[in-house]
Amino acid sequence: MASLRTTPDRTGPRRGGGGPGTASGWYPVARSAQVGTTPLPVGAAGRAYVVVRLRPGAEVTALSARCPHRLVPLTTATVVDGRLQCRYHGWQFNAEGRCVEIPSLGPHGAPPPRADLSTPWAVEERDGWVWLAPDQTTAVRPPRITGEQPEPEPVPAPPAPAGPVFGNLAPALEHAWHPVALSAELHEGGYVQVRLLGRNWTVHRHGGELDADPPAWGVTERHGVIWVAPAEPRDELIDVPESTDPAVTTAWLPPVRSGSPAGPLADDFLDVAHVPFVHAATLGAPDRVEVPVPEVTAQPGGFSSVYEQWSDDPAGRGVASGERRLRRRATYRYRAPFQLLLRVEELDAGPVRTVLFLLQPEDEDSTRVYTCLLLSAVGGAAVAPDVVAAEVAVAKAVLAEDLAQQATMQSGGLPLLLRDELHVPADRLGVALRRALADFAADCAAVDRAAALQQRATG
Image (cartoon, rainbow, N blue to C red; front, side, top):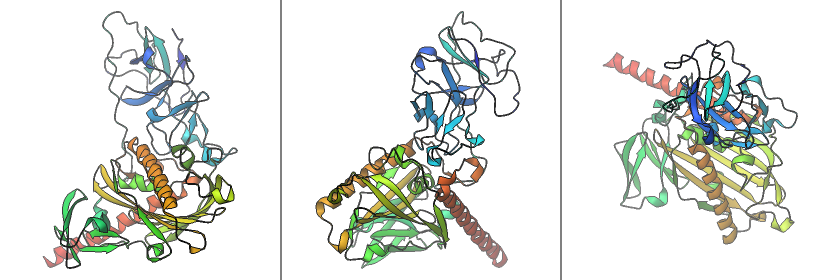
C-alpha cells in the first residue's frame, strides 16, 4: 500500500470538502492494477485527470487532463525519462505537474508558469484502488473498502473555452469560397453531390458552365478545383503561380476526410514545432527541436512567413549530394478562411516543391482535405516519375500522421481568444491564424448586420 502523497497547489486557494456521497473528500478513480505507464483518464469531483506511473512500479501521479498549449488530451501522452510528454509538441511535465521542458524554446528556454498542470490535493492507493482528493480535506486517508466495490465517476467532458470558437458551421463561412470537388471529379454534362456548411449541394457542369443547387452566390473553377461561395464572399482565392508554370509537375493526392474541424487542421498545417514529434517517422529531425521565431508579414486576407529548418530526407531528395539531413527554406502563405500554400526549397539538394492545402468544412465534425503537390527539379528539368511517386508517398504519410494527431484532439473548432490556450514564440503563425479568422468573422458579421439594417429600412 502506497503512502499518502500530497501535491503542491499552484492554482490558488481551494475549498475543502468532497462531492456528493464523498463526505471525506476522497474519490476512488481506478483500480491500482489498471494504472501503468500509459495515462488513464479519470474523473473526480467533476474534474478530469489522468493517472499514470512515471516509471514502472512507481507511485501513482495524477495530473489535469489536457496540455495547456493546444488542449491536447494527455491520455495520448507518453512517459519519457520519468516525465509525461505530450505527443503533439513534446512538452514534458514532472510528477508535481511542473512543465519542465518546451522543446521549441531550445535548451535555455524557460517554460512560463501557465504551462504547469494542476494536480489534486492528494493521491493514495488503498485496498487495491487509486483515490484522489481534489481539494484539501480533513480526512487524512481515504475510507476502507469493506463491502461492495466502489463505482468511479464518469470522466467529465473538457470545459469549453471561455472565448469564441471558430467551427465548421461558423456564420462567417457563408461569405467564403470553399473547395467542393476536384475538377476531375466533375465531367461535362455531369454533377457531383457535396456536403458544405451542414447542407447538401449539387454542382452541375453544362456546356462548360457551372451551377449549384441550391443556388449559390458563385461557382467557379481554379487551380484544378471547383469552388462554391454560398453568399457574397469576403475572401479571395489564393494565388498559385506554380499551377500555370509548364516546368512544374502537378500531382493531386486523393481527397481525404477528417473528423476534425477545419480550423485546428489549418493550425496543424501551419505549425512547425510539432514536426519532430508527430512526424518523427517521416520528416522529423528529433535532434533539432528548437524552432527559430518566425517572422509573420500581414497581407490582405491573411499573412505569409519565411523561415529555415532542418529535416530528414525520406524521399531521397539529397541522394545526389550524399546528404540525408537537409536544410529547408519554407515559405508559408495563408488566406482566410482555409487556404494554405507551403513552398519548400531544399537548400542543399536544389529541388523546390509547393504544397497546396484546401479545406472544405462539410459538417461540424467533418472536413474534406485537398492536397496538391507542385514539383520542380533543378534547372527546370522534368521531374522523373519515380521522384513524383516518392513525393506523393511521403505527402500521404505526413498527412496521415497529421490527421491521426487531430483525431485525438476532441476539438469543436479553433479557439480565437488567445488566453484560452498557451502560446509560445514558435506559435506565431498559429496566433496569426487566430487573429486572421477573428478579423474575417468580424468583417462578415458587420456585413450581415448592415444587410439586416438595410432590409429593415426597405422592408
